[in-house]
Amino acid sequence: MRMRNVIWPVILAATLFLSSCNREEKEDAWQQRIRQVSELGTVQYTVQKVVSNSDETWQIFGNRKILFSFKAIIKAGIDMDKFDAESVRISVDKNHKTKSISLVLPQPEVLSYNICPDDVKMIYNQVSFLRTEYSNEERNAIQRKGEMELKEDKELTDMILKDARQNAAMFMEMLLHENGFTNVNISFKQEGQRRTAVGNKNTKTIV
Amino acid sequence: MEEIQNTGQLEEKPAVKKQELVHEADAAEEQQEQEPTDAPVEGNEENDDGRCAVLWKALKEFLIKKKRMVLYVALALVAVVVAILIIHRNQVGKNRYETLVQTITEMKRISEFCTANYIGEVMIQDEEKRFLNHKNIVLIVRGKVRMGYDLSKMETQVVNDSTINLTLPQAQVLDIITNPSDIRIFSEKGTWSHERVTITKNAARAKLLELVMEEKLLATAEINGKRQLEAIFSSFGFKHVNIAFVADTTSAEHSAMVGDSVSENAKTLFSN
Image (cartoon, rainbow over the protein chains, first blue to last red):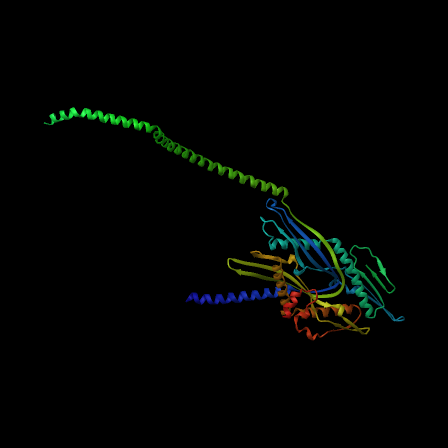
């Protein structure tokens, strides 16, 4: 009887304690999952890649080969969280009734790589009689290598970022022209790059 | 009386005995004549039995010896094969990965404004129960759902130097990202085809989208987007930024809130 009197309150207290812990964890985990961002995407590249794996490890028993083709959608643009509102300079010419604006945008960056499972196709699979089929883990590892290679391709990344920069400038110019600004001067934050002026009559973009 | 009789008999016996002896001699001669043909059989059988026994014994011993020899030879062969495999593997054993082709198939200008990212992890299981062949695969998929606006559909109206009206479409899902590096094969029993696993991965993506819709995260993206656009246009000199969203009457279905780049499978989940 004494044991019963002790056990039930302990169980109840433990249940309350554990449930409260879970609630906090859920809330923290939830907050971590949703992130507020401010990404202006200005260019989208679609890249087709074909990767192969040739397994000759146990050549005495035969080889196995596999080929995957996948499509990756790469988006690049500007992270507007890094946009410094204090860099904006607005001037109004009352005589000519023109408004001018100059602003500094952050350097563009790659915002996302997207390889949809439907876009990953196994186009060739040859396995010798004495070898086992490629497991799904092995197939996934090969696809992962292809993805990493894409992300580490500097030449491709530079090409995408160059286009992203140009498109971002064009987008901002168009937006500001539509909203009453006659002269628009857009530049990008310096990150060890030479300043080159590319301009027309009313717009000057420094990349 | 017996003795007398005996003598009488005795006198008769030698003659009889002689005759018997003659008969015996004849029989013996006959036997001898016969014996040359029969006599060897009887003698070789005995010899063969002996030889067989000896041979059999020798064979047994030989087999016993050979068994060991066979065992030794078999072990030696196995050792040689293993050595070949090891040497061969070290010399040639390669698992070669290479990129055969990489081409840019499309470049396009976009104006997407992503205002919220949801990062979630789902576990998805597929199984087939068959007699004596139970297959099961479990995937853990970590995905990112990007939500925001398509700014190409944004309309601006400058009221005066300090006021601007913006009309935006409703926030939508821009991307569901589940790359190969985000997918882990937790458990795999049996043989699963690539196509079947692709269906399982799409089911995980649909589950992520379902989570986003259930938690009404698009509303969060909308609120965040509104705040950020107000801040951006404020920096352009507009003190009053009025933002209105296009009321899409058909957007009661979730499929309307999903952007073009999202998998068709995910869209059909909600359209059914």
